[in-house]
Image (cartoon, rainbow, N blue to C red; front, top):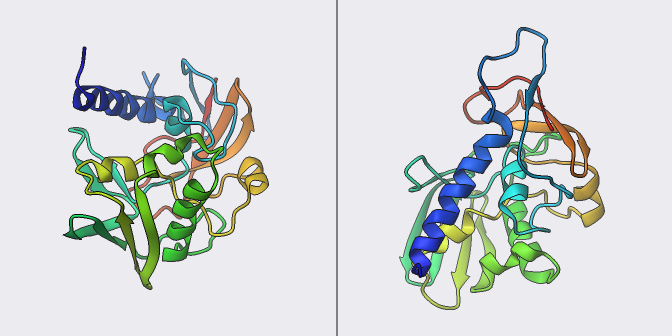
Length: 220
């Protein structure tokens, strides 16, 4: 059999591939001006609520619109996302410093309170399947206007890889709100969605990172 490290590495490689597949997967040639890019994907998604399902398909789709504190690069090394840097002052404490000028799709600026809420939401709502990534978290709190502190119950060498699966949502967002409207900080806005068969995205013109490389797209 495989070791846990090998299984986790394979899972992350699969996830990295799927995250690109929804938007980039079938790109042979780009659409012309004013046209919509169509992408065929090998999975269905039945919910737009981050964390409700702990499946690679859901994570792949939602990663177009929501972002975590950290992500992984092509080599599966941890890389900045909503956090530009982080510190590990002791074996159970992590300090994340947030990227400035980030805004949700509705125009509201990202704050540490949104991050704290997103983590607490996972911890306090047992039906959220993806909460398993945070079961070792003891506390999460705002440290300053641009940073958060997370304490774990035990030392975790893979903690950043667990954080990588936690999409940040607006503070106070209810399940009903998350199901009805995608309001993330990611490079794409979800403009249409039908559970299972189809969804549409368009570039987020206010995205804080590099401009999205693909124009409006529909996945089927």
